[in-house]
Length: 84
Image 1 (cartoon, helix red, strand yellow):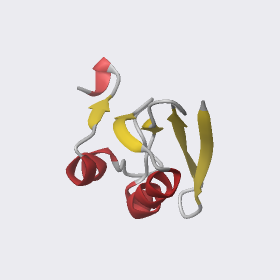
Image 2 (cartoon, helix red, strand yellow; image 1 turned 30 degrees about the vertical axis):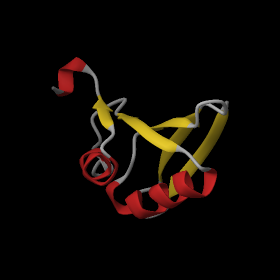
Image 3 (cartoon, one colour; image 1 turned 60 degrees about the vertical axis):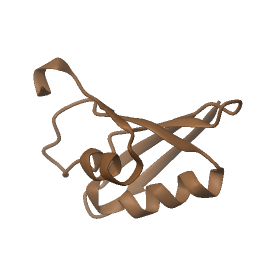
Image 4 (spheres, helix red, strand yellow; image 1 turned 45 degrees about the vertical axis):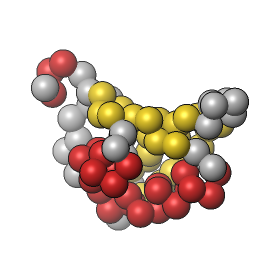
């Protein structure tokens, strides 16, 4: 398993990357819109394919990057039923 904690300093929030070492598929948990380019570069540098983003809660502290990541990579977006 690959695990990375990524920090966005303006909003002091974390994004987490989890990936499988064998199939090179990854998810990003709670991506931040301001760090989409950074996150895509991290995935590229590690040779990973973004399969999905996962929102764990409603964010009052930052805007999600899930939609932009979906547009850029074609990944799926998962979120709690209360957000849908």
